[in-house]
Image (cartoon, rainbow, N blue to C red; front, side, top):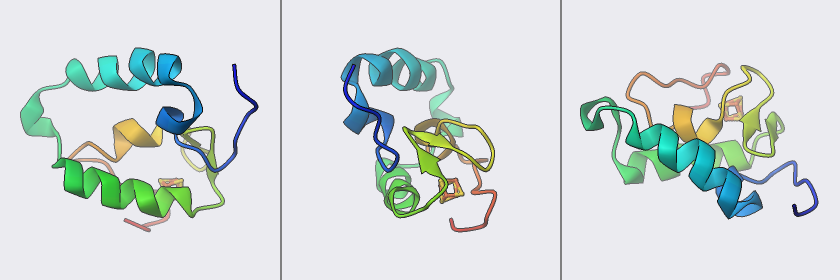
Length: 81
Ligand code: SF4
């Protein structure tokens, strides 16, 4: 396991963890519940600059941001996106 990175998304931190938690999690959701990749990546760019991000988890709400950012119903608890 690589050294913890507070400003990393899971995909940047561990491919094995990303695939297990994020890829599999998103696959289990109906596609109509998800936003486009473009919207997801724009949201995640904001998370990567946020002091609440810690190893892919939002310290404000405890979610995996790569799941939350992909959801149509997903919202930043600080209204950053
Ligand atoms: S969801 Fe909002 S508060 Fe949480 S890490 Fe992303 S930008 Fe920061």
